[in-house]
Image 1 (cartoon, rainbow, N blue to C red):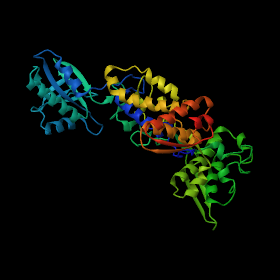
Image 2: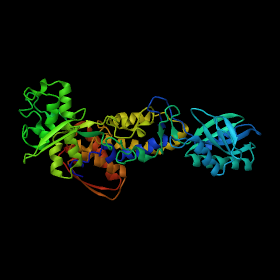
Image 3: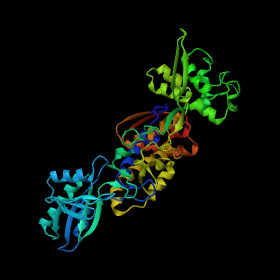
Length: 469
């Protein structure tokens, strides 16, 4: 276990290399509360058992109708939907609170919006085995048919249920809350905009114009500085912007108006005349939009397969925090799952001590406790190992590439303790390096714990306390 820093993978964090983040993903998937990101509160869903239990609470001889709600799309109107349902062999439908028999011809009432439901089954509630089985079968069939929705008409009172986590106000939907939803290494959970990195590579205005005291003619725009006013076709096309909008190329770039700078950076706002003269003195004219220098560099960066070209364009790039996820790396759906009011990324921004305190003071229902106890114990154990090797100041979202050699070594030590392997020979290269003296006793105790698990440790060390231990 040497003092090398961990890999430079931009997705690798303290949480991922210690496996704590894997346990957090399971914890949030199992007891996290889906919450509408648009401020409409908790999103409630029900299991088939909860739905059926609600219906069975009614008095015997209650009239029950099981209904399958049908969504109408722009390309599938009410008439087509009714005909499709009739062809599938169903006997009754409910349109805007009125039930119609499909055996008879009827006129669909005119309305701006339609609520369409198929009557799957009708029964009189008795608490015998046959009725319960029939209710259960009809409910489960409806949930499968609709993709997770079922309605009931109970003595003319209408009730709606869903297995899906969907906001009833804005229809924000979270599908399949599983551990993979919280992985920024997976397309399923990662933010679509930044692909799970938390930032985007974008051309930077300051890198494109490193010296705004220069004029365009003097090479203020770094990308074009060697071809200004030349016969180069890239420059001629770009010059169309300067000519059309009458931008002064002789004054300092910083003296141009913000509107003129935006035109140079991001391109024309309308089709403009483009005149290009080739080396052979052939002239070409067209009218089109002309991209700005930042858009030009970004397009070429994304299109090229050449590593050297990518490195060249990369010098104009900066890491810009993703505006869609605000640097949190995950999709909107994943960030909508909360425990005690925080999402999984907010938890990883706690330092080790704060994370331990949060888990110890977690307020859970009895059901949540039964699910979470073993997971929380594993997380607390691993957080404790990090604390015992003097790393309580780290947070789980810290990129592993930013760790010092000593920090990386002690994280690997903590991970090895967490794995609880036995019969292993460990060779440690100065594990106390970079560690404050007050934390030395914790490190020594950690090494002794590894030994007591049945492992052998060879330690290369200059610290007297460690040698005497």
